[in-house]
Structure formats: structure tokens, C-alpha cells
Image (tube, rainbow, N blue to C red):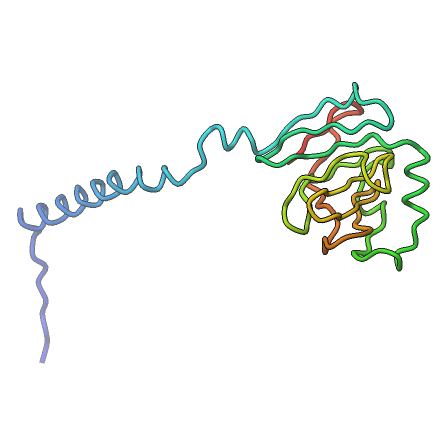
Length: 175
């Protein structure tokens, strides 16, 4: 027994089904696009994604505070004595052990987020036991050394290091 099949010519109804489906798909995409695009960050958020800092005016021993993503960033131009002092600290004396070399890209420049890791206060610069380059949180007495490492007080961790890079000898890009 032989089976024969015949192909039917497309009808006007077939064309209308395909055209209606295509128009519906384009309409659905047009309706969804504004919902998807509104999830993208606005221009002010994108602009705050990185900050360029001119460090040419920061003298040795000075600390500059800049704002990045709504957070204070401490940029410290450390003296050779400060660098020598923090690199001589044995890691077993630190609550959150980290070498100074792992926290900086250039020995004389420290870049840290200026928010205490205890309760989120902003530490004071050049205060507390490490007056020359350290940080002291007046809220609960946390003390950070010239490398932003926790040395005393209730804070559990070192000051965080933001992502940054040296664009040149006088410019740092944070973010």
C-alpha cells in the first residue's frame, strides 16, 4: 500500500497567522524594552564609578580625603620613616594579619576606605597612638596604624583597600 502526500499551497489564513505573530513579537519587545533599560544605572552613578585624584599637591605626611561611591577615601603620602615603621611590625602582633606590601602599590602611598570596620564610623586622621599617619575611630576607640591595619579596639578587620591604580606619577584612579 502506497501512501501519497500532497502539499497544500499556503493560504491567506497562513499568511495572516505569521504576520500577526511577527507584529505581536515586535510589540512585546517594544513594551519590555523600557522596563529592561530602566534597570541600567543612570549617568551620575556611572560617573561615580571611578574618581581621578591628583596627588601632586599632597606633601609627605599629609592625608587627603576624597569621596568615591559615597565613601571617604584616605590617600596618605607616607614618609620613609612611616613606611619603615609599618614594615617592621611582626605579623603575629596584628589582629588581621596583612603585610604593608600587600596593601599598597607604591610604598609611599596608602589608599584606604575611611570607614571603621567596627560600626561604620569615619576614623580621624593622624589621631590616637599613631599620630603620624595613623587613624583613630572616636566612637569606640579602634586604632589603625599607618598602613590602615587594626592595632587596638573592637574593630575586627583592617581598613579596606579600594580598587585603584596609578595612571601616572601624579594621578590615581580609584574604582
